Image (cartoon, rainbow, N blue to C red):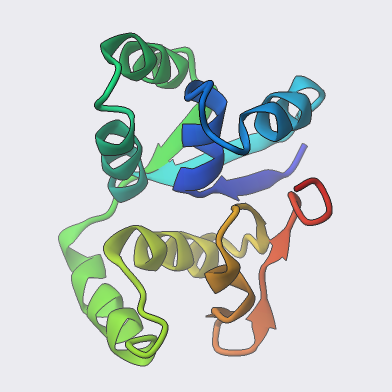
Amino acid sequence: MKNVIIDTGPIVALFDKDDKYHKTAVKFFKDFQDRLITTWPVVTEVSYMLNFNVKAQCSFFEWIRLHAVSIYDIRNDHVKDIINLLSRYSNVPMDLADASILLVAEEKGISDILSFDSDYYIYKLNKKKTFNNLLNGHY
């Protein structure tokens, strides 16, 4: 079992039945067996994007409570790294959730990701390796 980072999009798609990727996410996660890791900025983004439906938000938080995903803690000493990442990718642009994901990937040596965003083809892990998007070809 390997660690896989999950971005906002696939989580929102899983819990929002009206999301254009909902069926893709449900089908993908049906047989998914690896460990999911995300960050608090991603959790915040998902919660905001699901704010139209309290039931969807509660289902999402229950999913977290049941340890379906581990949440990597961004600490004060990471802020300098986040500033550097935001500056390095200012032309993309990168937001806090993206920066936090790249930070976790670099710190934990994880290159597998689940995302519907094309930005992750641009971001470089430790300035050279690219992410391996496991959703590639599923949408």
